[in-house]
Length: 479
Ligand SMILES: Cc1cc2nc3c(=O)[nH]c(=O)nc-3n(C[C@H](O)[C@H](O)[C@H](O)COP(=O)(O)OP(=O)(O)OC[C@H]3O[C@@H](n4cnc5c(N)ncnc54)[C@H](O)[C@@H]3O)c2cc1C
Image 1 (tube, rainbow, N blue to C red):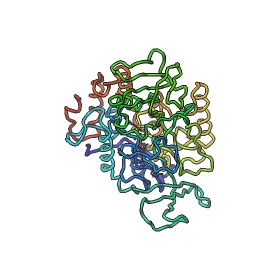
Image 2 (cartoon, rainbow, N blue to C red):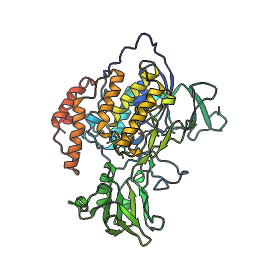
Image 3 (cartoon, rainbow, N blue to C red):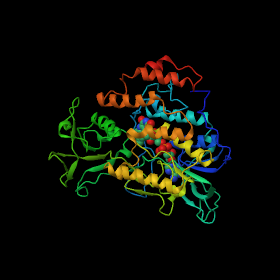
Image 4 (tube, protein in one colour):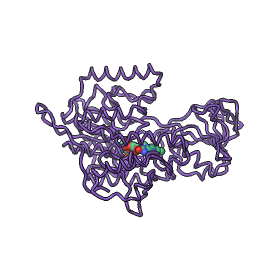
């Protein structure tokens, strides 16, 4: 990986606003928390990262462990953070996926996965490299779960974080045994949003005799051997998992809102996979009826139906709420106007290229906290949020799509970049994202191994030379 890093330029602060260093808590050491910690420290803040796991990487720390409640309804269950399945390869090409000034290039190392769409372990190793390169480990309190974040009553704009160290009888400074309280100027929430399952509501499910599982607890196909499986969903994971399972199951029936008459039926290339519209109802004899009147006798329903934002530790007296999966109100997906800039969120947007977006969000937060960049007044931020919500409503977008940036992600990134005085997102990255989407639609089975955007790969690696001092192997470019 790179040994010499050229940092993105930082704008010169206005002379009238002296830079201020804050004491900042970051919750989570996944990709979002790591880049946030780096950029906060670069800006001169003192940073403590709380991580309940025993290593960095968040989602990318694969574990074969699953939760005892396979659909994740029992609030007392022991949580497993990661939702990765064993066969997972990235659904974005590595060149576009990496942080802006720390490219995700292939390494000439037999331990590493040089593919353009590598397996999950390679992403974890990249995040570990990033952590080492920027010395972030030393900022992280591992196996330390944040259990409460709230404003301190008698200290204006200070936050108290109550945390719990796993398995240790820590010196106790708070009223709750085993818990530790610490005071911070600001808190950045980076706890991820692929852990708390969302489940499809299915009429008759309480009488239905089969098993249910959410994709959060899917790891390998073996338990589905010889079964008739109904899988709900059409996301990237749903597509991967249905194919994984089809290798061993007797039948796989995929039910999705997006399935229309012309796409339903037996899937080409498979003799055991069918597409259907959504489930209409299920019955005590084991049958599952679809909305087009077809039905199957199934043993398992696998919900690949997404996740809920979940902040069980956050106490804001109702200032920040989660309503139909809208976390709000948030100015530019980051700051609750009434608590800005002392509380912020990195990583809420979805249907995006996550790492570069996290990086720009964290640079903006770091600069706002130090007074390098100014936020509008609380009223102006609220007006902006309300105008955004009205525009979603006017276009018929349900609340739960508030953080789905999709086609507007690069405009959003460039807005953030402009706030921070950073260059805009590279054209090749945008074109590559679009080319990948097109290729995925054209070659759903093979898009990870066959593509046509070789010229964009070359452009990317030409760009990466700015950030890397090592030679990029020919192998990486031609793969
Ligand atoms: C199946 C799947 C496939 C994906 N594929 C891709 C892909 O191909 N390319 C891509 O770019 N992205 C992909 N993503 C998106 C992925 O989530 C992001 O890339 C990114 O890893 C999210 O980082 P994060 O830091 O926001 O969250 P996470 O990685 O989830 O990290 C959050 C961290 O917070 C910690 N935490 C949570 N609560 C607490 C607490 N109370 N106290 C202390 N610590 C806490 C967790 O332990 C965790 O380490 C995929 C996601 C999934 C689920």
